[in-house]
Length: 531
Image (cartoon, rainbow, N blue to C red):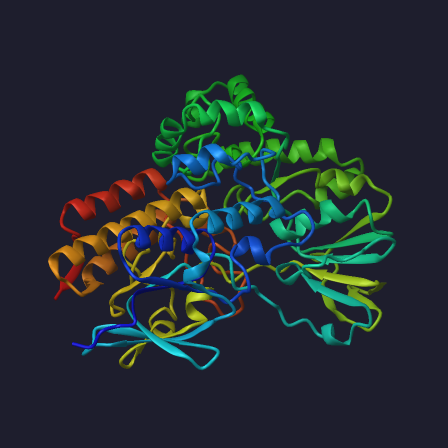
């Protein structure tokens, strides 16, 4: 039997790829990372636009696999900014000497499985190829940007930037007339950060966002308290719905509160800040009336923050239920619109018609700018996988997933043996604290590879029926919620031509972990392993 060059090729050197490499090396596997960029970091290397910041608290958004690492790293604030997150990832890479097994500026272009040799041939953009028994795609859920076709962009006479490709040296926007197109998390953070520096900022908004304040602050005391009980703290996170702590007490159903208690609970969640607001009630994304109560509360907060009543109404979402699009955690976003140098163009009233050498035409108005910034989002969850030509005989992953992803547990796809996806579609991933989900997936995959090694088994793939059942479970569970009512990137709605299918597993990290653990205990039920 042909011997592969490596036990495993890992694609991507972000949080998931680095931990997977560390884990496999510790278990005695020969593994290598292929990384398209020049540095570790993944999302936190590429997304260095002004104001880039995590929307999960720093203490939670960190590795738990090494108690020494937990104790030696000190986060400076509640929600870490991109430079601190990148410094953390670099520290991890250096501490465990991971770079020696990473090939940078090496983009994977093709994967081809050989049934006879029972390994993958991995081809890269430099023309090289290598083989591996297993390929583990740590490609990230938000790593392939959407670059919409906007007429005239190339003709603009000023400077044009995309949030996902911000110059490493930074950009001086002082006294410039700047346009920001897009108000998702990247746009919101950029807008908030640059507003005090520019001569004038014009925000082009297609869809308003629900944003909850971060109440960001230094966390010396909180960090010290958590460090004193990190094992217990991490164990608690792993059995929560979102993979992270939310302020006690735990949520209850809406009907368990009287009207005054409803207001108290929403006020408490708002005052605590962050994404836990969306867990105010257990039925917040199940019951339209409950959802409306939570949305109305946020709408009133926006009205209090924005001085101009007419402008405030334009900033309030009305076309989708709260929490069915990714909520944002802001550090003063709505207050930005009280500045004299900030204006809003509502693209629902004044559609964007194109870019001219001088600026942007929206509706009947020509706006002139020195700088254009596009914050237009990502081809979430499936984009990075489908950017690679993945083949097994005549079957390609792109063809198989043309009507939406088909996986078993979000970990593998039938017909593609020995190919794993970390936080892939139809797993909790983007609905959770990504670090909790990443570690759970890496640990599960690694345990499986050890079992296969001990048994002398070389090949594994999901059974078609197990995959079909999981796809049905994922879709049926999502259909019980309000999520499909929003034209969100959770549904792939931001990518022209992409089939609208709800991409993540909605029932929570706690439920998902129990399922995965049960599959493993049942001798990896639903998977076929052979020698």
